[in-house]
Image 1 (tube, rainbow, N blue to C red):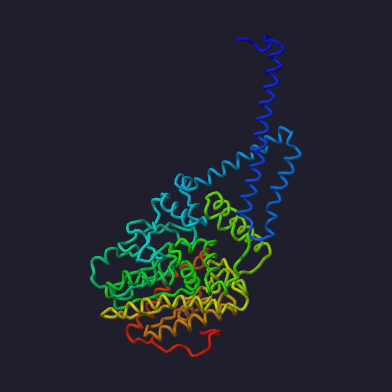
Image 2 (image 1 turned 180 degrees about the horizontal axis):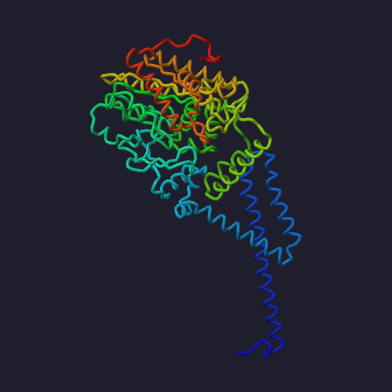
Length: 514
């Protein structure tokens, strides 16, 4: 093999020129890769981090990097460093596009926390493999109602993932979390059905109804699932309870979030997909197109508002947005701590103690000035519309079940004036909701049971906290036992005397009751 030195001088010069050309072409290609990567990074930041005009400043670091690269692009070290950043961006995109695979390998649940469009939500549900997951599937002939897949495993630790041993239970034959699995199949009639949300389901522990079973000698079945609003509760009762000819139907209204849940459902009704309820950009769009809700909420407008919806259709953008939003929340919490703001007094009380009846759907939207009462009224009308479905179905059943409308207070209502300072707007919301529900119950010959005052008396006497240390909306084991005891006493009053069938308050809504 001939060495380069042994070649003629003219050929050596040609080889040198060719190598120089190749080197120049390779360097040009690297320049293109680096610049394209910087522009792509800027686009990702624009679509995932910028929601308001002032947040365009987030693009400033990208612009600085472009200027630095333009000035020092002849420096091999600078070029190599920027090429490394380009490779890092490529690895990030690959990881994001295969986030479900990452979850399956490492057992993480990142993909379940992303704000995704309906198409990608279906992809995640179909592709994510978690053996201990309680799989969700549609039920009750309603596209916005779901239950756990019968036989799948529910596994949850109360308060925080490291706070204790997880509670594990297999979903029963109806797709709920009853310990007496098989009761529905073995009994032609069941005395009482309860339809509620996560508070009545039991969040990382047995439900309230499991404790009530030990105190009231009736056959009972729980149709409660986390996330249920009025629509889902009524759909579950019509599907599973009415065929069993129950004597009692217990419909829970949870003051913490049933109002915004009803608005979510009505806004998403035309799409016919439950994923809309948990997709903030799509929910905003649906609300903006609704003839009533668009006048109640301060909905963002302009080009920047479309970025969030675009990010729901791409895994890279959705994952990046989730990371940035998580960082924003962490920074906000750090600033609150450093400013020594007390979350248990004044206007901050409802943020920590979940007087959520004040908060629009998902806490993502702002009620227009002077529209708060309209917000409450619109939400209550949506709830009554669902309750009317049960009224209509009961008309054609015999024997006719007796309905108990159960008002389950938010933590603020229980601890107002005890461990939480009064908050005027929360008091107005509480009074409005309680009066409206009592009036509906009286009009339709339903019983009305309000747990607010009995629970207040109980916690004041015992000086006990019903919820978790970190989870301040779901009941602790101690809280579950106390609520079950109070609920049992109130139900026994209804069963024996019917004393809760009383006329609604004649007071004007807006004051505080109790």
